[in-house]
Image 1 (cartoon, rainbow, N blue to C red):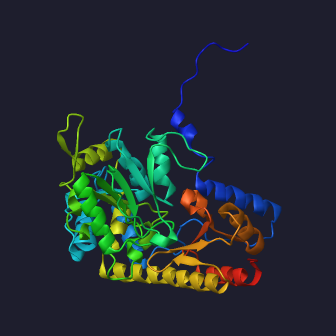
Image 2: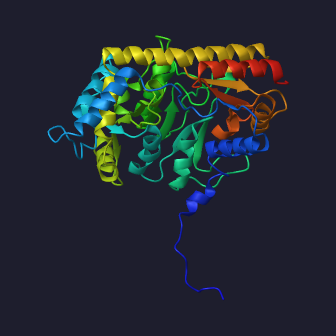
Image 3: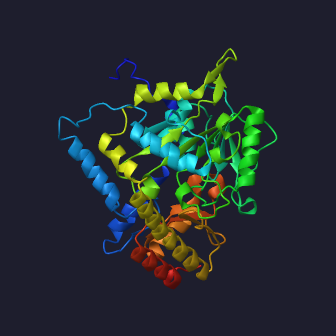
Amino acid sequence: MLSSVIMTKINDHYLKLRAGYLFPEIARRTSQYKAAHPDADIIRLGIGDVTRALTPSVLAAFHRGVDDMAKEETFRGYGPEQGYPFLLEKIASQDFKSRGAHVEPDEIFVSDGSKCDTGNIIEIFGEGNVIAVQDPVYPVYVDTNVMAGRTGGCGEAGYYAGLRYLRCTAETDFTAEPPSDKLDLIYLCSPNNPTGAVMPRPLLEKWVAYARKNQSIILFDAAYEAYISDPSIPHSIYEIEGARECAIEFRSFSKNAGFTGVRCAYTVVPKTLHGCDANGISVGINQLWNRRHCTKFNGVSYPVQRAAEAVYSEEGRREVRELIAYYMNNARVIRAGLESAGLKVFGGVNAPYIWLKTPAGIDSWSFFDKFLQEVQVVGTPGSGFGPAGEGYFRLSAFGSADRVKEAIERIKTNLTI
């Protein structure tokens, strides 16, 4: 006999999410293939997870931080949720002021990941905002808006009702121009994940001018800024005049210093950035994010912040440059190998991601299966990043150099196109 008791209700917005998050689906298919081919030597160039160990200066600072926790006179309990001043001051001076960008320590919020921050930031904004994302796009931007009930359902073409998609194609260098109508919140990512495209200064200037004119806010993901080698490309949106009045920036220690397993990032919310309440009264965004941060987050651990501080030492900066050079050499090897195999390739110059066009008539998930079966290499299907990603495929330069070279040899020898 069925109970008449009504069960606890769930958040129905989660049911709008498509099949599954991209990377678990990749893991599922890879595990399925491995189970059927236990002797297969699979090379993983899909998820953007680093492979090099923490550098000596970072590791030494990490150990010193742990040692501090072992002595009563240096032990730390709860720290400031926003981050310790010793780290905030280094970030402000070396990541921004050194580039002519104005950022103050009390505008920086240290966290355990920019993925978390880009997902959580939507909480401080009201319903009814017109939200825009690039297409293709990092899935977290879209999925977290779906979870929060800020979209309708997903149509057959893969687009969620209520979101504005800024289509980025090869013809536009995988970047988007500002539209003629008004947007309220705009997610921009440069260097871009997944395409590896970067936004040149003139385009960023256009976006800042657009946001100021329309009183919009740009959510600028700069997690891969350390990989920019072209001196004409801005590393921060705050290098653009007026950006402090219209932009929030997200940064991470994951990909530049190898902190994917350590967890440390930060978000910049200028005190000059404002929105309005339901009555049209101006409200500072910094104070809202500070309240959210302090309410729902207890801060990054002291030893981790000491490790992050070491990234800014003279030795730490040298080590980070070496890490980036290592991964960007992988990117060059991948680009050259794919091109010699007859594939059309983008990215991999100012970013650690290589974006390739799948052969004619092969969709991105079919190409994933083909790649796995013919060369035992795991990549990421472009369609997982949005409808405009269909027909493309992403490879990551974060593998070990030997494995990257082995993967390219397999592709050149065994991949049928």
